[in-house]
Length: 452
Picture 1: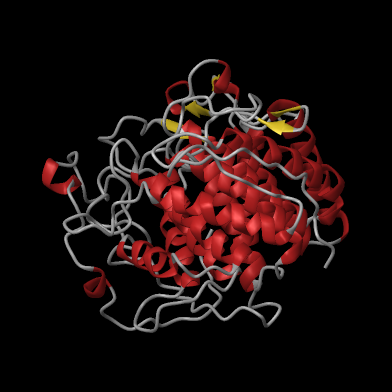
Picture 2 (picture 1 turned 45 degrees about the vertical axis):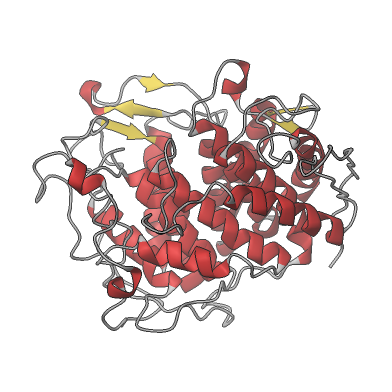
């Protein structure tokens, strides 16, 4: 394969033990070395493997969903670099948060998680299946089974009664946001459905993905110019919209559309190509200046969640490039220039090499944490996209992740079982050790049939 060149960036080392990141991004070896330092700094924030803590959780102020997203980055880190240093920690974290029904609704989070929270963990499992991240031996569930579990539970929550469909943000009615239908929850479902269809060849997943896109588009959450808005409320029958735009909303639909393009043909493929191109062009216009990615809130103040969003656009741009090669000439330069700019911010924190939020400043801006570090790691390692194998699948005969058509079928559905908010006891730690979660035998196959 032809290597994607990236401009060399070299920062002067700091004094003593604290040293700014030194990154030569002009070779695969240089990119891997930079990624190694970035990954080490990212994992320094993780406490789930400490005595008395819970595997798969991040400390305050980070919410559960961001831990799932972070371990998706660590799956990608192994995929891009081949470094197995964090594989055991990553596997333990993911499996500990799967829940008894293998659908990422664990006891320590069930009453507080939303569809988007669960969706991010499901997408991490899907990535693990696609890149052949090492699976834990049976009776542990396969990565495919975990992704199917999330999809099954969310398909059951499709809300026909309000605004003609779509997923609500929250799963249970006692949580704030239950009346809100946000674009990222529906985007996770759309993205996951498209990728499950690509992996398994089961067209039911593809039909759900198409239905989700059509609902989002019909509700005006994706407009004719391919702006992707935040969400809408059932209180006014979804007539008003929150017009905030975020990189991860654009990115999740971009990759989903590219996935649908990859597995369709004829007029349907032409339609998905148009959608992919439209989303990509609008993403560039909205979230890039001089080839450098930025979040719109950086002009003011981004909250803890928002500081991580560029990580997901970076990872989904790279995957889009592989699934829809016609996007190459746009995406390649963006990954290159954004990575070169991003590493210039990595001279802060306790290590002296942790990264900042704003990539267009040319220096560390004082903002650092899980989100900032994850974003720089993803954009840097994404420049290795031409150095790694394509995603695998059961359709190609290259994917062998174990599926489970019944995963998640016995999970709680909105408003049917739980009637009160979580207590402090509910929120604290998983009530079982990872090994106990794994009791039982995984059945099923790599395909499923689910009623629409």
